Image 1 (cartoon, one colour):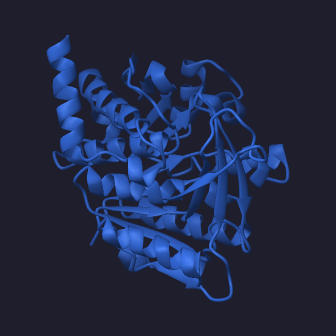
Image 2 (cartoon, rainbow, N blue to C red):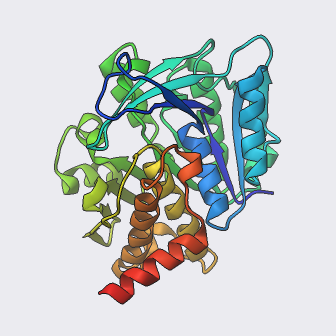
Length: 326
C-alpha cells in the first residue's frame, strides 16, 4: 500500500526549446512526462517514500508511454484508468527566463478524466497522505471524484495536501475558478500556494492576512512558495520565512511539485512520532521548508518536470555542501 497517493492529471508536456518566445514562435518542443500530481508522485518516490497515482490517460501511445514512466519510477498505477477512444492530454509550454510559462492544452475529455466511481475507498484509506491540485476541480465529474477522495482521506486521518494550480485558459470564468479553487481548502491539512497565485485566490498580497483566512478555515499548515526568494509558512502557533537557494536554473516546470513532495515526505517523517503539521515548532518547520526549497531549486537545473526531479541522495549532498559553504 503506497504511503502517498496523488490524484489528478497525467499528461505530456511539450516544452519549447527556445526561451522567451511565444508558443507560436517556438522552433521546436521537447516531449516530457508531466502533470502536477504525477510529478509529485514521482518526486515522493525519488525522495524515499512509496507513492501511488489515481488518474486517467487515453488508450493511445502517449498513455502507454506515461503509464510506463510511472511504473519505471516505482509509482503504483493500480488505479490509473485507460480511457477507450480518448486521447491522452497534451500541454504545450512556452518557457521564459524569469520562471513564468505560457500553457496551451489539448484534450478530449478534460485533463483528468476521473469519475467518483473510480475512487476506491479501501485503497485510499490505507495510505498516509493524499495530494491533489485544482485542475481536477474544473470538470464536474473529476471534481466529484476529487471531493469523494478528500472526504475519505479526511475521515481516515490522512494528511490531505492541496496545491491550487491555476491555469486561466482551462477555466471558462475567473470568478467560478476562484470559487472552485477555494472550495478545495475544505478538509485540507496542508496547502502550498505559489506567490503568483496567492492574490488571485485569497484577494490579498499580504502573506499573514491570506494565511489567516486559510488557518481559520481549518488548514493546519500554509506555505507560500516564492521562487528564488524561498518560502513563507504559517501554522496557528508559528510563522516565518526561509530563504531560497541560488542555482543555475534552466527551466522551472515541476519545481513547485517537487517542493510539495518534499513537504509531504518530511511531514510523514514527523507524523511517525505522532506530530501533526500544526504541532511542529518553528525550528522544525524551518528545516522542512529549507529542504523543500532545496528540492525545488534542484529541479530547475534541468529541462522537463519528471526528468529533472532530484533523488534524496542528491538533495542530501546539496544541503551538506551548502552547510560547508556557510
